[in-house]
Image (cartoon, rainbow, N blue to C red; front, side, top):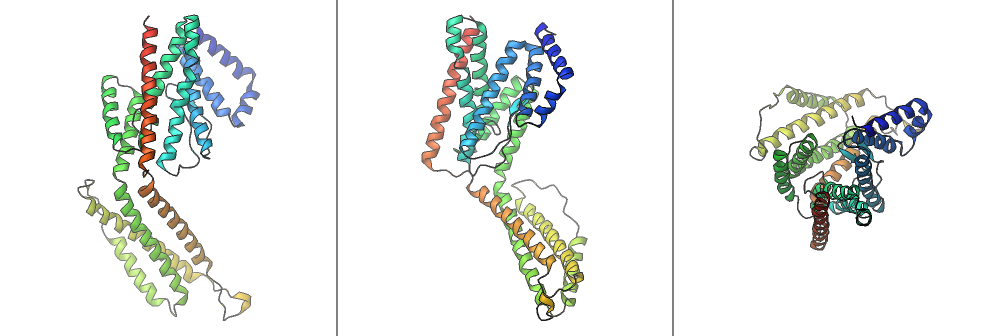
Length: 371
């Protein structure tokens, strides 16, 4: 272990032993998680690479994340405080989803832009002092933010280029796969897996839309059917009919065959439709039995004015809530990545411009470190 790492460990142990009250305050403060995780990351990096490297990398990551936070604030999107993960960077989570890919790209662009600004002061400091540390800051800042611009979701670059076309994600995955093959590592492997999942989910959005459309029809049918129950003169025929239908659905053998996506989508959709039929039929059957057992209430004790069923009202409210969720999901699937040509050109220019500048700093930083 390096001497600097031992010093940081000693300082950390002293603080934990003598300032527990401070840790308690930070734990419940708004930025407590950021501060504590930052200290942990600082110590972890220092133990392996030394405290100068640790300070540089944590500073660069922090400014990068603050770029996302500021961009989100400008768009009115609430975020969590930044949380550092040693050797994996840091992350923030959005408390609200962006309304479209254009907004998400704006939030994503804020990170590498701020990250580039973060290491610019190191340029005059290096020219003035010729200290290799400032060359390291330039190089690290360029590498970190250039890597984040790879067109693979969930990296910033993938979220930016989604405005242009999500098909670019596949190209990014090929590039990342080559990098992973030549220089394997757990973090890069995790990013590759997440990127693969995101790309695949995007490919399957049309199928997801079909399933949601069928569920929407089932919800509307459910609400239409339960609205007619209070008008029934007798529930016997309805009970017999529903009981037979529920029994038939529950006794049917589920299709557990492996169906190849795209190739067997018609069969997959039929299977998902049967699943939804079973879910909503059983839900309706359980509600029917509950409604039958529910005592009849009257408005102002007038036998000619039966009060609405509380069970049916609650079921209708839950159904409308789910219907709103389904409509929102369907809307996002069909409109989220839609953007005018003018927006696409601006995003492309901004993306390529930032990538070019960072690439230049990357080459310059390498030259400085090899002098």
